[in-house]
Amino acid sequence: MLLRFLAPLAALAVLAPAQEIRVTSGIADFQVVQRNTGFSGDLKFGGTIAGSKGSGRRVEARLLKGDTPLAGFDWVAIGKAQRQNWAGELKNVPVGGPYTLEVRLQGAAAVYPVENILVGDLWILGGQSNMEGNGNLVDVQQSIPQVHSFDMTDKWLIAQEPLHTARSAKDPVHWAKNEQSQPQRLTGQALEDYQAQRKKGAGLGLPFAAEMYRRTGVPIGLIPCAHGGTSMDQWSPALKDKGGDSLYGSMLRRFHAAGGSVKGMLWYQGESDANPQAAPEFRSKFEDFVKAVRADFNQADLPFYYVQIGRHVSSENAVPWRRVQLAQLEAESEIPHAGMVASIDCTLDDPIHISTEGLKRLAHRLANRVSHDLFPTVDGFADLKSGPRPVSAKYEESVVKVTFTGVNSKLESDGRLAGFSIHDEKGALLPLVFRAAIDPANASTVLLYVPSRPPAKAAVWYGFGKDPYCNLHDTADMAAPVFGPLPIQ
Image (cartoon, rainbow, N blue to C red; front, side, top):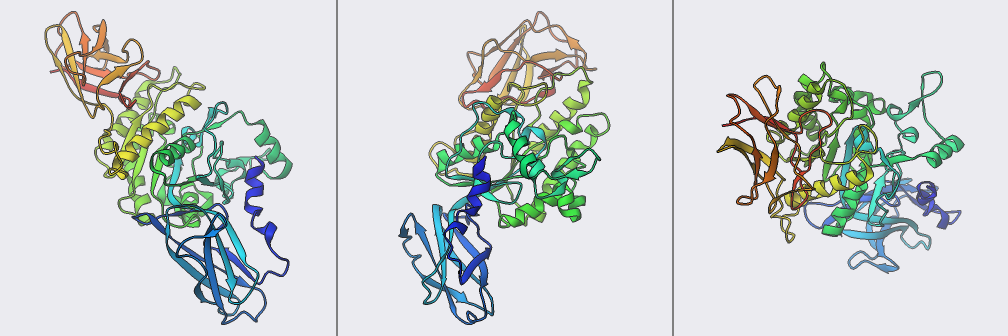
C-alpha cells in the first residue's frame, strides 16, 4: 500500500531547493496519456517559473527512455515563458514507455523531471459493487509496470488491487458516513488501518488491463469511478452539475482531470435496479446514460462494454432481476459500438458478488470483445465472436433444438449441461427437460430432450430465476447470457 503514497513523490525527491522551473499541469508522474488513433500520443503540459527573470526565456523539453533521449525528442524548444507561466507540447510520442519528461529554461543546468509516463489507452471503470470489486483479496491479479491507475485521490500510480478506494476519494459522493451520518473522508491513521484490514476489493479492471497489454503491447491507464449499491438514478447525467457530489459529476470531472480523452468504458451495474419500481425503466435509463456519456466525453462512438448481471442467492422476487437481465441483453443490439458479456456461470464470493476467480474470467471475456472490435488487425482477434446468442427453438421428434449464433468454434459445458428450462405462456415451469446436450451434428445447437411436444406458446428459458446453475459457453469461454422466453416453433 505504501506505493500509493510514495510514488507521486518520486520526482520531488530529486529537485534542487532553488528549482527555477516546474511542471504543474497536464502531465504527472505515472500518468498514462491517451494515444491518438494511431500509435502515438501528444503530451501537453505547462508550469511555472520562480521569480520574474524567466519571462521571455525559451523553455526546452526532452523525453528519455531509461537514461537515453528518445529518438527525435532530445532537447527541443516548446515555447517561451510569459511572466511566470509557460506551456508546451511534444507531439507524436510513440506508444509505450515508461518515459521521463525533462524541462528546463534555455541555458539552465537544472531540469524538472516527470517520471514513468506511458502512452497508451485509458479506460473508465463505472457501475456498482461488482465493478468496484468485492472479490476476496486472495490470488488477485498482480501489478505490472505497464498498467497504471488514476486512483480515487486523483493520483497516478502503478495499478494494484484494490483499485477502488472510495473512502479516501477526492470526491465526497464516495465517502462513507460517520457516526453523525455525515459523509467523511478517511485520512491518516484511520485510512491506514482500514486499508490494512480490507479483506475484499478485487475487481475486473486490473485483470482486464493486464490481459489487454499482454495481447497488444499497448500500456493501459484505468480510471476507477464505480461505487457499490448504486442505481441508475444515482448515476443520472442530470446530476452532473453537482460535480464531486454526484457519481456522474465525479466521473466527468475525473475524465477531464485524466486528460479528457479515453479509449472506452467498462460498466457493471443493474443489481440495484432489479426491483419492481426501477426494473421497468432500466433499459431506457441505461441507454440514455450511454448517450449522455458519449456526448459529455465528446466521443460519439465511444466503445462501451458491460456485464449482464448474474446470480443472487436470495428468496426475493426474481421477476425484476430477470427483467434487468433481459433489458441488458436487448440493449446490446440497440446501442452501437457496445458489447455485453455474461456472468451467469461465474462463481460468487458471497450471495451477490462475483468471486475473484470469476472476475478474472469476466475480464478475459471483456478483453475478447474489445480485441475483436478495436484490434481487428492483430492476428486472431478479428475472428473472435461475441459469444453464444439465441436464435431459435424448434421441436423435432422429442427434442427441442435451441440454435445459437456468435459461437466461437463450438459450444461447451463444464460437466453436465445445465441451465435450460421450458415454461408455459404464463411463465410457469413445465417439467419436461430430462436431458440437455450439445448437438454432435451441429456444435452451435443445444438439444433439449423432452417426453412429449410442449404445449402451444411454450418457450425456452436459460438462467431462469435468481440463482440458477448455468454452464454453457463456447471454446473461447464466452458464456451464453440469460435469455427467454424464446418461443418454441
